[in-house]
Amino acid sequence: MIRDFTMLDAPHVISLGKQMHSESVYKNLDFNPLRLLELAETVVSNPQVYMAKVYDDGEIKGFVAAYATPHFFGDDLTSGDFAVYVSPQFRNGMIGIKLIKSYISWCERKGVKEPLLGVSAGINTKMIGSLYKRLGFTQEYRIYKMPSKC
Image (cartoon, rainbow, N blue to C red; front, side, top):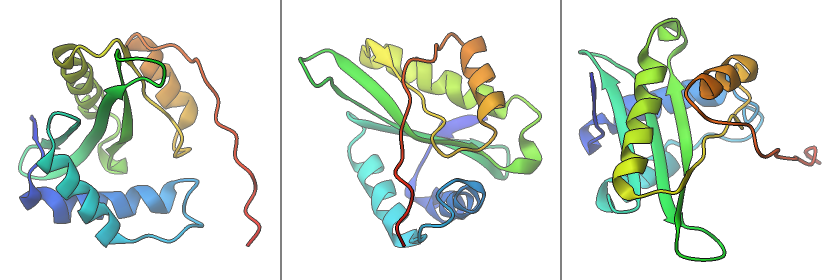
């Protein structure tokens, strides 16, 4: 079932965040669980701007965290995700779709004119891109990264 994230979920979601980090293109960067805890506190304390949902059927198997903000040029709301993640052993079901649909519903309730989702973590990019397209998203942008100098 999809439900709102609470601070009681933080240890479980941070553990999933560590799992996500280890399989992402960011695995060469440090992982700081306290940074994720700070983000969790921000999300919970400002529901006008942030949303977080977990898929929980006795075990938290995935989460979505996102934000809504006026776009750069005016007051219409846009949104984006911090992360959409489902633990690898649960990826062949409906959890990801349910999490994304909860994000879309939140955007509709907020009056977001342009919901965005990214695949910037580099995890199963083709499969995730296909899923986003099936749910009505189109590929619009690309992200460029400078190779690490360290």
